[in-house]
Length: 462
Image (tube, rainbow, N blue to C red):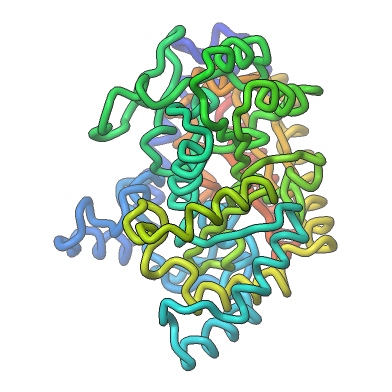
């Protein structure tokens, strides 16, 4: 195996691989993908009613000239319409973190469908779920939505209404769903729309301030303006890749937000991978408001948002107003009977402590396999782990979202993903990330390690 110097890279990405090899290998892997998936190819050619050939635009973000078409997903695997089975390390980008077609969740959903899916009335399941979320996350009052995106929209409204302040504060290169106020990045000391954001309603500098992750000095400076209603954060960045908080950072965030009367909102939609109560419970965080979505539904659309006792009392007053149906909060299907039955079954049978112990162990083994492979070749890569989730980078670990964004290597990302798909392993799109469910086994980790090692061999040989 060849050990390369940084001079073997072209452009701004010093990853230690041979760029001329990368281009040739990508052509070979693309041809292999086409040969392996004739039925998915025909499906793509025959689909004219769907924009870009897919029901949702993110489904075009996979590598390859056309998307795979799903036939069946169960446990930690899925099969496409060409009959090829894959180890699924994406799990619906966290939506199926419990595993596909979880038996108890499927049974609960089937039973509730026979009893009615939505009546716009509360159910006993909803009260049970509220109690369980309170136990797990420590916030006593809860409401529901159909996604974490909706939940984030709602809590930003509540925060502005309660504090009387106009702006929200987020981390640079954050992602909290398709929420206008959060689709932003920093450009110097300015707030601008995130590249690719379509049709922002207003100049985002009117709604949002931005600070770098792990930067308490910058946070204090932003908070001192006195116009911020709330700070919405992931306790560890995940949607620009895994960026972990430095020691003392989250404690500093809580201290500064309290000092300036800023409500702290923690979005655990992805960081639930840290344990049954997410990073909030694992790291003893004290949010005023907490948001979570998708995972807790076992694959059924749902979002939830919880309040501290103090904030919950203020929200109560807002909710009892006669105008609540046009307040910008809620929705006909929010908190529906089907979603609540799914969440109750999920929190009863999944996302449990012993399961996290098992899946975190698998993620550690995955991390070890990746690290061994790039260290053997003296590549300047790194790998980060957060509970049952792990991700590799083609650079040292980033400490901010801006660092992470600058380190993205789209060509190398696409190759690594396509190489893995062609060998029966699916990683999370947009990242080089793996997520583990209780249905995964050590053999799944080994399979990834073997194909990852072979990919690096192909990239660095010759």
